[in-house]
Amino acid sequence: MKVNMPLVTLLSGAALGVGVLVASIVSSPSTASASSTSATSRPSPAFTFTAPASPASGTAASGTAASGTAPATTPASTATTAPAAATTSAPAITPTSASAAAPATTPAAAASSSTYVPPQADYVAQVNGGGAAVAISVHKGKVVAYVCNGHAVATWYRGTAAHGKLNLTGKNGGLLSVDYGSGQAKGSLTTDGVHYSFSAPMVHGVVPTSGRPPGLYEATATVDGVQVKAGWIVLPDGSQVGSVEYDPTSAIPPTAQAPLLNLTTDTAQYDGVTLVASLISGLTGSGF
Amino acid sequence: MTAQPDASSPAPDRYSLGIGKLVVPSLIGGLVALTLGVYGRLHHPTGVVVNIAGFTSAGYVKSWLATIATVFAIVQVSSALVMYGKVPRVRAPSWIGRLHQWSGRIAFLVAVPVAVDCLYGLGFQTYSTRVLIHSLLGCAFFGAFTVKMLILPKRGLPNWTLPLAGAVVFTLLVGLWFTSAFWFFSTFGVHR
Image (cartoon, rainbow over all chains, first blue to last red; front, side, top):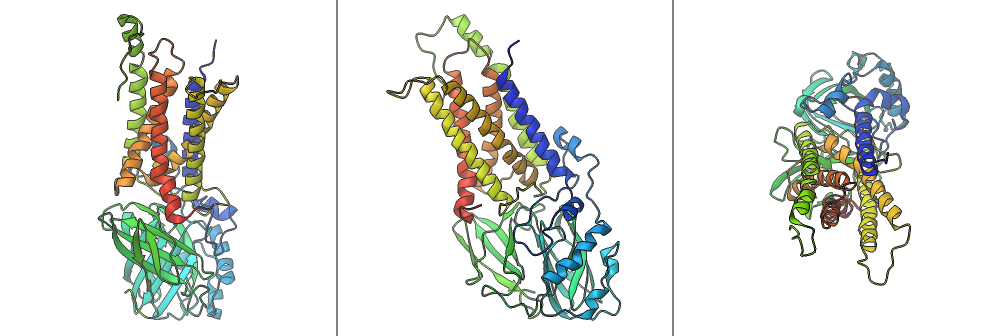
């Protein structure tokens, strides 16, 4: 019998597609942190983390793949990478109280009650295991936080903090819970169903490598008649991670990679439109 | 555009029989395109994808894979033109058929992970003209490719069917490349 090669090609492609889909769904933040060495501040993490059980999918393709792959809740093991990340990229301010943040099962439980809570602070880091960056700015009790991965993840959080703790909600059921002190902000977050933990050092006093200090940058503009909102997280080593949301007030804003933010001019070019970024600073209160 | 049967085509009943063989593949192809589109629309995009180490971001991985697929697609069309004797003064070498088959297979298999990333990570989106066109072309491409693969082994089809199917698939892929990789490279720069 003659083999129907075109059909074989077609089925091979289908099998490959299913394989890639399953690979995308199965790998989780916990496995990424165990195998990845990108816990330090790297601009381009390997996106080996993945994937929530997709809530809205009723099709067969996702239905089979999504079974049994609920978002991994952060295991205690990821906490072991956290202090390392904090020390390698730690800025000038490194109080002794930071050592009190021993690895704990729940990141929120790590806060020491004796930690000094700064009224104004900015924290920036890659999440544990890499794959996304988080920025938290606190100004007199008000908080602006942002997580993005330079791809389709971008979630803003706004709210208030009390006694060095904050619990905020973002779009799509996004959650952010943080304990912060004078050295670092430690916590966990959920965005688009993916769970991350992080230890972000305070970035005050970090000498900028490229004209602008590390921190959280925001820009809004209208492109093709659609409102866009871009956010960049500039890490202490000068690298940046940015995402741009289209129609940010909609229920599920489409999100993509943000263009490179020029840290000398504070601008970025996107579809022929110049985005002008401004720093959200807990230290000065700008952007609040 | 639909091609008209010319005077040299077979008898009407045989001709309509050939056309009839296109119905099922076309329906299956349409179903493939529709399924991809519906999945991309209903599935909540997570933006979480498998990246390849050494690349700046998933966008670059996809853009380069799409470019590779497009290059092989150009090989596809070129080899097809040679096979059909449409290139003056070029006689089809014996290996041209193999070149055509393998360039097509590689182009398709390279395009598949890109499509999975798009549908799983980003979904079927409509927020700009480029993105809407890209979403439509993407679904249509895999539908059209399915049709072409299904009609390839069939005998007795009208002469124009394969060239037409190939042209449609190629046009869709080039359109996909221009609305994605070309745009991406021109926005973010050409590098890894």
